[in-house]
Image (tube, rainbow, N blue to C red; front, side):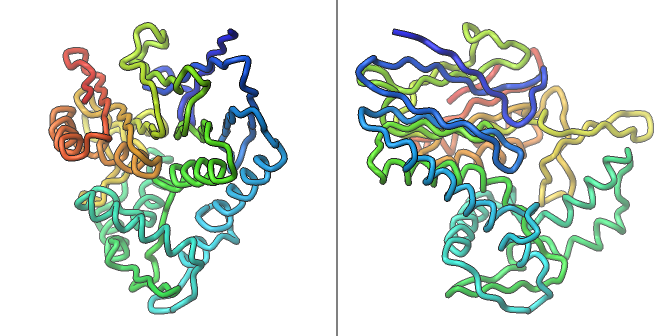
Length: 343
C-alpha cells in the first residue's frame, strides 16, 4: 500500500503558521482520480475514490461550480453579481439570482449567530484601513466616521428575488465564507453525481465525504506554530463527512509605529471597533474549526480570532462546543506560557 503525504498552508506559506495537512492511503481495489488547478489565484485539490470514475463528468462539475462562484460572489470580478450590487445607489432595487439570495440567507444566519463579530458589510472599512496600512499609516477618526454609516447588515435588504441597500457606500465582501461555501457545493454536487468518497480542499478549507478507502477514513493533522513535524501536531484527526477550516493572523499583516510602540495589524476587521485585529503574544494566532459544513467552519474560525485573548476565545469556543458536539476548536497563541487549546 502506497502512502503519499501532501501538506498545504492556507493562502500564504509563512514560518509562523498553524496549518492543516492530510495523509492519503488508498486500497488497490479503489481507483483514485485527482483534480488540481488554480482558480481566482487560489490552488484547489480534489480527490475522488471510486471503482467507476468518470473524470470528464467530475471535471465538469468542478468547472461549473467555480464558474458560479466567480460570477456570483467574487468581488474582484468586475462583472460578478456581488460587484454589481456593491455599485448600487441607495434604495435602488435590482433582481438577484436565487443562488445569491440563498447565500445571503446563510450569511444572515451566521451574522446573527456571531453577535456582531462577523459582518460582510465591513468592505468600506476594510478598503480604508488597507489603503492606509500599505503606506504605514492609520486612518483618522474623521475618515472612519465617514464610512461607518455604510457598515452594518441592517443596511441591506433582500427577499423574493430583490435586493436594495440604504447607503450608497454599503458594499459586501463575502470572502470570509464564500470559499467554504464553494467547498461545500463541490462536495455535495460530486456526491450527488454518484461519487460518495470525496476530498475537496481550496485554499486551506477542507470538506470530506465518505472514506479514502474501504478500510480508512480521511486523515487530517493540525500542526503547531513553528513546528512542521506531523509527529508534534496539535491533533491528528479522522474526518467522516466533516469540514475543517483555519483562520490566522499570518495571512496578511502590517506593522505600524504608534508613538513609542509598534502595532501589528492583520487582515480581519472587527465591525464592533471599526479596526483591524492586532496580533499580540496572548491573542489568538490561529483558529482551526471542525464543523458539519465548510461555510460554518470558515465563519467560526474567523469569529474565534475576534477575541482579544486566548482565554476569552477559549470560553466562547467551549460554550459553542458544549451546545454543538459536532463542532470542535483548536486555538493557538504565540505566548509560550499558554498551550494550544482544543475542545
